[in-house]
Image (cartoon, rainbow, N blue to C red; front, side):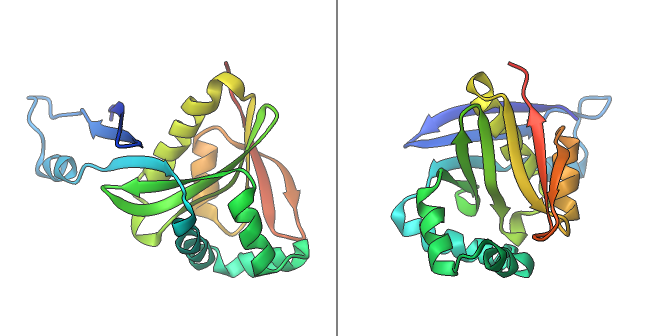
Length: 189
């Protein structure tokens, strides 16, 4: 399967559209390919604004409930302090899919290393290839001034670990007390 990507900025939103260009041998699409085309996902990433933070924090809490509280306890911070860090450390991009908030990506630059604090998608948006597309977008966007992209992922999140491995990330260390792996990918300029 080959994807064609188109990007443009409309009303401050960076839009990325992906279309499957594979057809049958005779050039016609199968019924499922036609359905996929109709359900084509348009992804946009827009910087978060103050009115979005509560909703995004709630999404993070919902999706990372099994390990978030334990991690905060180990770090010695409460939810209020975490909320402050979420608003002030790095930047948050809201991920829209077909005009609906699908999740967010929280990144922070550390010299020539880009740290992804979180790539969070709501359950109804998971398993649709959006995470892969966002990773590809991040790599393209930061490739010229970034040597390494790194992220932490809870060892119980096998689906995310698999996604990151497919995209060339490797485990470079572990935080056993928190149950997190640190994964990195070196970018070639």
